[in-house]
Image 1 (cartoon, rainbow, N blue to C red):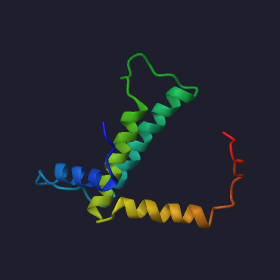
Image 2: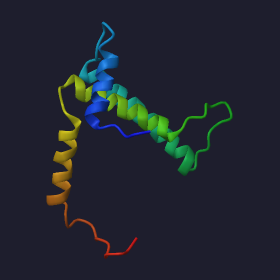
Image 3: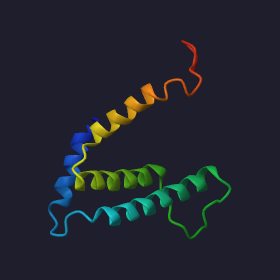
Length: 112
């Protein structure tokens, strides 16, 4: 399976959403939905890494699935606001590579 670019993912989501009369939810509704999906991811992380195991009655979900849900809603939000996520990513990486470049201790060459 070949990887997709962010642009391709945004188009795929837009093609999917565009087939429905309702279209994208409002930014406020999508922010609430993003919070809900992030909560589900946090619950999954807590089950796997934390002190709270799942109940026998709870469905098995994967972190991959929950991260995918967060990504889908984030793409919907970006699309509805006409934001190109590749550009957003480049902006944040530029910030990390300039403002935050000396914030953490760098590994020596050859160090894992």
